[in-house]
Amino acid sequence: MLRISGLPAALLVFCCGSVTLPAGAAAPSAGAPHPQVSLQVNGETVSGAPSPTTGVDAYLGLPFAVPPIGELRWRAPVDFMGRGGTRTASAFAPACMQSMRILDWYRGMAERFGAERSVFPDLAVSEDCLYLNVWAPRQRGERPLPVMVFFHGGSNRSGWSYEPNYHGHRLAAEGAVVVTIAYRLGVFGFFSHPQLAGERGAQANFGLWDQLAALRWVQRHIAAFGGDPARVTLFGESAGGGDIAALMLSPAARGLMHRAIIQSGGDFGWPGIRRLEAEQARGLELARAIDAARPPDLAALRRLDAEQLLEVGERVFSKHYHAPVVDGVVVTAQLPEQLAGGDWPLQQLLIGTNANEYYAADQRGAGDAAIDAAVAAADVLKTVEARAALGSATDAADAIDRLATADSMLCPAQQLAAEVARAQRPVWTYHFTRVREGRAAADLRAYHGAELPYVFGTHDAWLPTSADDDRLTGEMMRAWVRFAATGSPADPAGAVWPAFGSGQSDRVLRLDAVTTLVDPPEPVLCRIYRERTLR
Image 1: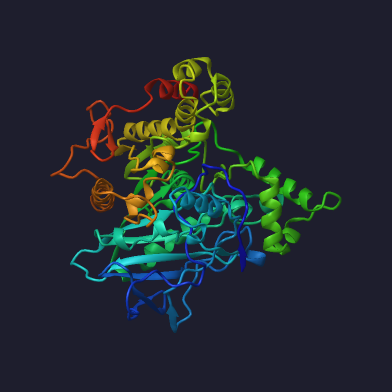
Image 2 (image 1 turned 180 degrees about the horizontal axis):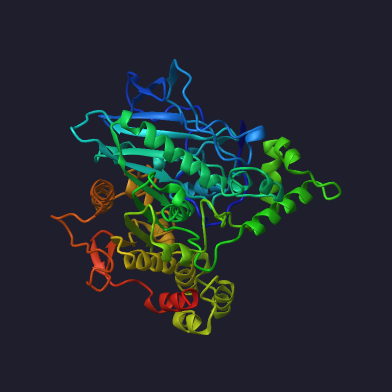
């Protein structure tokens, strides 16, 4: 197990949530020690503990796959089978191998709001990391509860299942069984090698295979926690949302999930999903970086120390976005072809983005040249028409944020919503615009990941949280659970939220201090995006 910290991080990364307790630390609690609670799960007696929310129990660090180490590195995960006896499930397991770029970013976030960096302790990581956490209401009705399985973000190279904003006890109290899962990251989880072509089973997308293994565990065992395996909703943010987009269309996920919530999803694949051959070439590049004269073969790479593999992978692929590739099994084709098939596991979709996914206050003084450079660097919106839509640099930071948000998240999400609706799957869309009170919050605006404490009801103590924030938190938590339970987030007694493509001008629900229906944001930029990707 490795404990590391101190690497620099970009201001905005495909992540979110907050850094939490070291592995092995117990779940947060208040007052006197809680009595243990036990269930029979996977052939074992699993002992958890009541959570900080009265009436909700926590079962932490449950293995769903055999440790993917040694000969099991870069293989499909092997389902974990219980060994009998009693398993204590009151502490989180190590996070998957990763650098501490998100840790440093969140320590910086705490400083912005006047807290000490030490509010975020170091994180223990290990290659033995395929564990999940369950929060379940103790009282059960006649009908099993909907199940919500969370996929964390982090560019598929960082992040973990138990950051404080991902603790599921408050969300579970709204009437769901909440599960958060780990999956292999970076070169451990999103990697291939030509020699893998000669082996049976998985050849790439090992992080997605881990997610499927966790969903198999849910199907087999969630009923023991009071969950309904016939109502499984995947919800995830950033790269986690992008992974969900891959699985919700994949034949490999059939029978494992039913609904999906994608929050600020990253890399859906509209410009093109990378092919297996490109991933295999990265495997050779990694081997050459280890020893240019005698590059290690696949067997030698499997014997390599995990810490060395992490260091080399982070250095060689520091600019690479670890995304799913077309492997013919989990990801079967390019996105338009998958959508045209129409035979997906997905039944209903809730999808949205935040207003300011890329806003950086330090760019306020930049001029038109900075906007020109951002347009030139865009994935899709690198056009004269897109540059004209941004106008002059009265606020370059705003223009660059508009472009990057539209190019990476807003327009891809709108397009996915439209295509899913066209296939007769009900879709609801949202736009999160809430900015907290105070100067520090104003400099961040509705940033990437800002919605997460509202979804889970887990506002950090150092974040300014007003009555408006509390009210919005309740609305969002109830909507997310209502969607998981019924297939619709709309409250019959609350604000109108029509399904996307239902004939009501495809309006979007703006989530803010006052929740209202609005027209889809950035119509010009998203039209350009659509024209350039749906040819």
